[in-house]
Length: 236
Image (cartoon, rainbow, N blue to C red):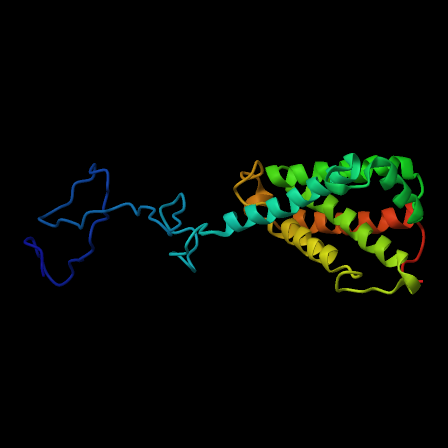
């Protein structure tokens, strides 16, 4: 539509720019549409400039975890309580355990050097790792320590059997230890979840590089302890 002051064919029909501050008046009766700043809603990420931070997926659901944290809590509690109970049984002879003397003898019979030191390290390390897992504190390192201990347990068990044969199924196999190793690896990789003292840390929300490093540390630590403190080939 021509403006009321139309002067001919050479008049331009450019719309004046809209100034949201209202300091620049608009000519004529033209009223622009009101401008609304985009707001952040549930499941939508809005950047500092008013636009969606993720333009490829603007309605991406953010941080929906459901019952994942509750499942990780039970996983931690299961492994942690088992380690604490086993350590107390070994050190103090509770629940039919062998106590310090029996533990030291079994470690020496398995071929380990410095059995007197390893007696306290094995029992105390189990209790410490188990408590940290229950609390959800320094969880990747605690699970890596548990993993190292469990790997040593499997190697010692295989070495004690005739011809170093690996049996999986109980009662003579290592089914129980393998399952605990799987649980420890899972905790290292997925993190402790939010129901723990590590709930606000990066390895609880988005575990990645640190979890891989802790996993490698646990495996290497278990193998290194066997090599340097025992030195026997469990499959020989």
